[in-house]
Image (cartoon, rainbow, N blue to C red):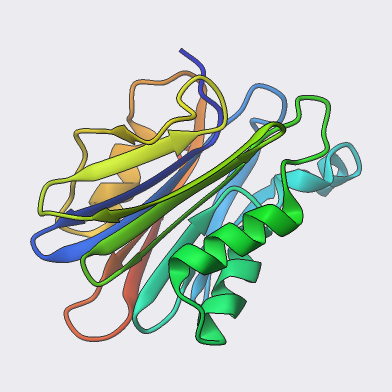
Length: 200
C-alpha cells in the first residue's frame, strides 16, 4: 500500500521521539540532511523544485524540550509558535488552520507532530477536514499519520534505542516506495539527538 509521507511519534525507554519518512511516486530522488537543530528534505536535482515547490522543507525541528515533525514548511511555523510560549497542541492547530492543505494536483494533506516530555501530538489538514489530537505516550507506544490511506492516527509497532535505529525503522515500515527517513530522540539531558537514513 502506498501512503505517501509519514509522520510518527512515540516513546522508548522514557525518551520520546519523532520520526519522518518520505515515500514518493512523483519525486523519489530526494535525501535527508542534518543541519544544526533541523533535518532538511530536499531533491537531489535542484531543477525539481521548479516542478513542485513543496518537495523541499525542514521535516524535523528541535528545541531544548520539544521536537516537531512535519511534511512541509509548517514545521518552522510550529516551532516559532512554541518558542513564543504557545502549547504544542495550539501551535499545531493554528499552523495547520493557517496553511491548510498543499495546493498541488493531489491536494496533499499537511501533517504535523510534536513531542514534549511524555506527551505527543499529531495533526492533519486535509481539503475538507482538520484533526489534531494529544497523546499521553507510554513506553513502547507509537502513532503515525500519513498523507494517503492512513489519514487517521494509527498505533504502530515501532521503537528504538537511538535515533539511527528509529530512522531506519521508519524507513522499513511496510509501505510502498520509501525514499529517505529521519528521527529525533530526546537526549539524556536537554535537547534531542538527530539521525537520518538515506539508502543511496
